[in-house]
Length: 354
Image 1 (cartoon, rainbow, N blue to C red):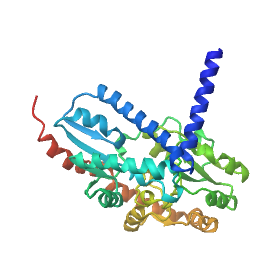
Image 2 (cartoon, rainbow, N blue to C red):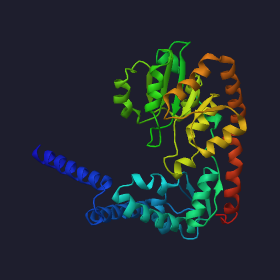
Image 3 (tube, one colour):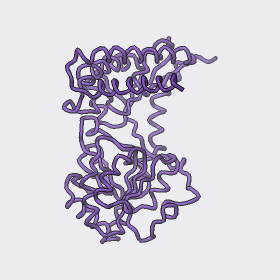
């Protein structure tokens, strides 16, 4: 028992030291040993993966930190690198710790640059991200958006409203996707206070427990539904029981500004009017199809105004919902699959028959 206690204490100390090193703005020489340890662990991880990785004809890589393992096993095989985010630009410069600003971001760009140069094909999820990759690495990428695939939807045995005991006439606004730093919630919660009690917020995804102090502070415990982690195939069918969706992202960094979140396409597939902020890529799509309303996520009065416009005018809300359904029919995974064929078919031609 004493040995187990000692191990726990040691583990706790190490975790505490790592959290300090990861988040501190202390001088670089103090953080440098932790960076060296981090790099060593990264390469140990790659060595272990390289030993397990089967020999293949095409490698599809989603995380550039695993590129050394693929490089060790690749040989003459083709490599497709899928950059869902501009990973080294997720956090803005002013919010980066010493570890990130001085060490890990520079190291990450060096490693991702090696991966990009070695790849036969590079894909990203938006035109904005493609531009970022080109600006940093000088390589253009194919844009394949993370649109929804309705063929995978599964309707749960118990719906959202029944499972959560939500009244049929309650107006539900949903936020789809895990919690991220690039989201605003404070003003949205403030706006809810001044709305009718039947207006409620449904959060579908992980990490929203961190909002509980803000929710309790405002007395909104009965009006915020934390659905938690949800099976991917259930998300859109559950969201269809809502009345609107909120895309509460803001351009925290160049990566967020160029984002096309999965939750955006899932909200669209659910046929929901979408409340959205200042995101360039999202703006272009909504402007084309007309199924959303722009909101200032830092202004509670503006949020209340835009939400109540949907609550009070059912015909207007239905019109936006119909436009969302029309957009989803065009922006579905069935259409994006053709782009994947264009990426893989030239590479398949290089694979020698067994």
